[in-house]
Amino acid sequence: MAARKPRATAKPGSGTQSRDKGTRGGRPEASTAASQRQGTAPGQRQGNGRAGNGRPAAARAAAPARAGAAEVAPSAGPPLWFQLTTWVLSIGGLGVSIYLTIAHYNSSVTLACPASSTINCEKVTTSAQSMVFGIPVAVLGLAFFVFLAVVNSPWAWRVTWPPLSWARVGSMVVGILFVLYLIYAEMFSIRAICLWCTSVHVITFILFVLIVFGATAGYGTAKASGTTKAPSRA
Image (cartoon, rainbow, N blue to C red; front, side, top):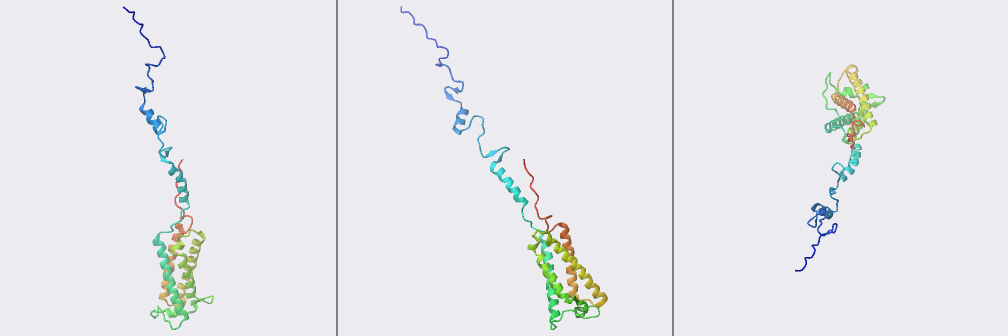
């Protein structure tokens, strides 16, 4: 009988029957293959435009710009009703002042006003007190309300310039003092009341209250012009 050939044994480290630890049946792991296809290392999150705390990088970059824009946002001025009320009152006072000025210089224009012992517009407008420093009171009222019609317009109320606000207040203080003088003159010197003049006095008083209130609220000044500053984010 032929002698049996000795059985071949695998040499240690030959690798013929050994299996790579990183493979299954000779194929690469699924996670490793997917990572290689996506160009990322295993366990690394795929980039999707987000960084840090999950906020988009573009949004984080734009946040400081938005905050800076909010700090210099233009003022919307006082409430719309306030703007329109002061403007309409100023235009109303201007209209009455124009009418009184025309009646002063044109003798053919007669004021629509009843004549009695108490109410007599002609007696008031032709009295000595109707002139101040040689200037007709009607002309002074005309100049006063021209100024108010400009500074109390909605466009002027949106201007946040403190000197303009103080000019409003100063003009109203002078105006209300002059009105008090005219009321005193009507009651104690002329002893007659002019209804047209009284309408101007009432308009001046209402404007005085509104504008002083607006000044204390900061309308037209830097106090009410800026918007709330955006909080900084770390």
